[in-house]
Length: 410
Image (cartoon, rainbow, N blue to C red; front, side, top):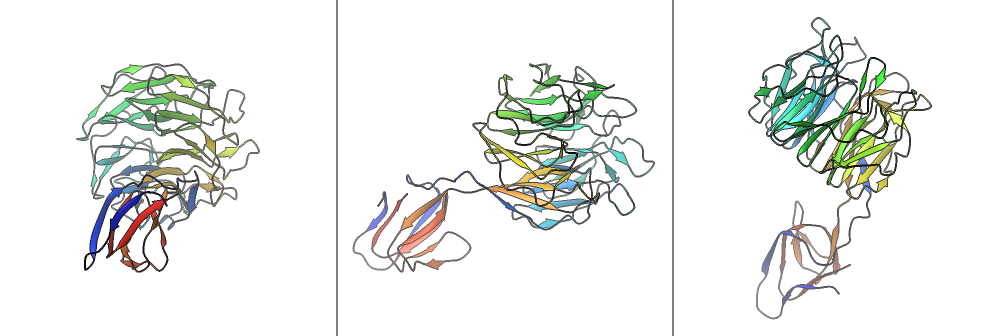
């Protein structure tokens, strides 16, 4: 046996012992697996949509459908139980927009709209109750900006609007817009990620030139330019885990698709961990728990890929279950214990409503108790029919018993 959590000898009647986020000394740690599932599909199949998170929701907004090739105003929201709802649509249907979060808001900015098929400066914001607001528009209309967050700001950087843009728009927790120092070089098809006190914007493309530039903005929106990427590239993605911002994949100056991963720590020192398991561009990054996940994309065989690579907080790479459908031009966001990948285009040219979810496998404790002990660590009270039960850590709930020992062991 492990430690005795509760010991009771003698006495009459039942006692109730409550647990609130209790972690026993002996637990079975997660075996580092990520569990894959496919929740309810999007309400409309589409590609080139954007994802962002707020409160207990992951939102997927906009995109292009394959019925009339319209730019959509559709928003799908998934809660922490992966139940889907459809809140108020975007104010203007558009695709190739960007998402980012700040405070109590998820923001969707820019893109190309379905009014005159022109570049858009529109910004829609959703609060934690999924109420939509319309803050000040971007300072420059553009498609394919990239979003990242730092401190009290959501930033939208770069993009294309009749030419490559160096513009950075920042929105604070009151949705007030400012325009900090521009990027050090105008570009689009860049990637964004956050680490510590910095939002980073890396790589990109402009005038047949693939960039290795990295711009970093601190919590005061002061810009610096840390060590460039190890390989200049575009069409890649970023995600964060622990004390690291990761930039993975992409296409280089030789039009080769890359397996390269560049990592920046909270001091903006760069390193290059184990590469992706498959070189690819147009992949999507999402963070959940102690993982940064990189999914899908277009590989060197010119086929859309279903591979998922996961990096933990020690930058050790694993390859969890593949996406249910190989695809690109999709979006990612996280909610609760889940990383979600939604929409996109598959190898047959169909636009997808598919949603893939990944969640870290939880650590558990084994509790040993007298048969007949009553307990509740879920939705309903149960009675122990054996001496051993398994409970997810941290433990919240209660045990009712008369006499004996409650203990745990690995």
